[in-house]
Image 1 (tube, helix red, strand yellow):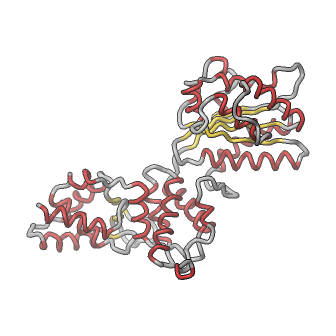
Image 2 (tube, rainbow, N blue to C red; image 1 turned 180 degrees about the vertical axis):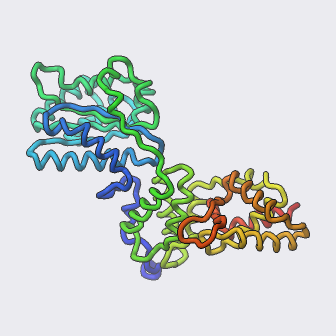
Length: 388
């Protein structure tokens, strides 16, 4: 059975995992540069440093932190300095003891998960660090989950880790990752150890940036020529509403799986639409049922004209709209009114209607289905029209 499954579009699907960190992060050079500036004293002066990474979901915070930590460790080794790092997901470990236990487990994987107080575990951690003569960068991912449940006492203890002994080396640096403003959640003592200027902000990715990210992952994950440019463009387009790279990568993987399921050697735009609908369908039944008769007819026309295409022109959509109106005994609206229907559908997020850009001759509007395969959408709209 495995032998008859056919050749997969994937060559290394692992590179589409959320845990995978590429050798180079696309469009996060500015954030990497700031982190290098902030943490350089850790290597060059044995000086502890703290920072906060903030931004919405899918903006590359965790991936950037991991890539930076790997690079920092390599940089330190080249300078004969010992720097290590550990990442704790505070959504999974949202108590002080659970966080400290995972940090201790970094050096002692078999350390018992109960029977020791936080103070005792921190003392054991200190001995491990002193024995290894290593500076540890602790990354607390989704730190707001820890702060919300346990408060900021553990943050204070970790940032003051080097003050227990006179003239002792600073052994621990801290990096907090959060979608929320953690400064509003820290008490005065903990806030004093952070500088607001040590905040690294991650904005949402633009359509162009998402396209580059999808291109990079496609090169890593897929066979040669296993995806066409239109499909890459469409993944970037449908992900751009959220600026979310995770969502774009998830769509790429699901589209590849759908191509394999069909026995197709290449991912096409219909695979992308189906993957989008499966991953996160923002076209709900309520959106469609809220359309009036001519909006439905326009959407039916777009779905028919879009089969197998990443986008269509206004002229193609309007021609198909006139045919649909004849089919349902409706008088087609004039060009200006039809353009109004396009704007309505665009505002609802059902389609994207944008002025054409480079590569398309003349000035026209490019219409793209974002959320659902053209074939599926046609069936849904036809059913709604037939039921009226």
